[in-house]
Image 1 (tube, chains in turn purple, cyan):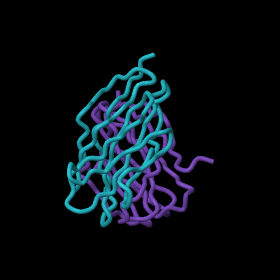
Image 2 (cartoon, chains in turn blue, orange):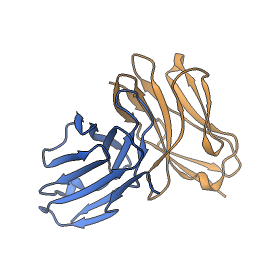
Image 3 (cartoon, rainbow over the protein chains, first blue to last red):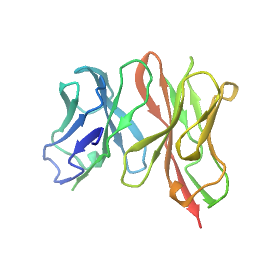
Image 4 (cartoon, chains in turn purple, red):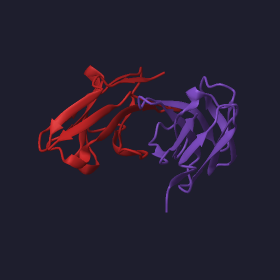
Length: 114
Length: 113
């Protein structure tokens, strides 16, 4: 049973479209994250939610909107996709906020914008 | 905020040889330090972590890392590399009072037969 699962794994779409990536964790963790990994493998935090509350919101275009319906789910919606949004997006979770603890990652969602 | 530097972008070692991957961090207080491994097409998997106590920590797959406060380093080592160790390795630093984990740029490991 996958601990952190993301769907879809691959997403190919045209510029200007809107798309969503879903993430679910069954670890009972309080905190969830979205990271973006670019073509050079650099990992950058985008958002973090703790118990459905947004606690980290890095400098990310407002075309990106996270939503956490409950603490086990964190979805990422992207409006008006641009070429530069092409990347692998990783969802992760950790036991609780503020504890500097281990992250558990999903397998990633590779977004290609044409 | 904390930050991490991995000086080596790409390292190639022969199978059976020893390995050391470098990691330097910047943080004003005691850091929480991690090494993650990413195989192609996969997510990141934790190899080992340091929170406190013994500065030499053992991880999975025969890896170990040593925390050296005086050098702000947390280098990853393995005495004998296997072909299956070829992957991207990420050092990361977290902190007690925030959950903003920062990752280094990664080191790609190639293993020659």
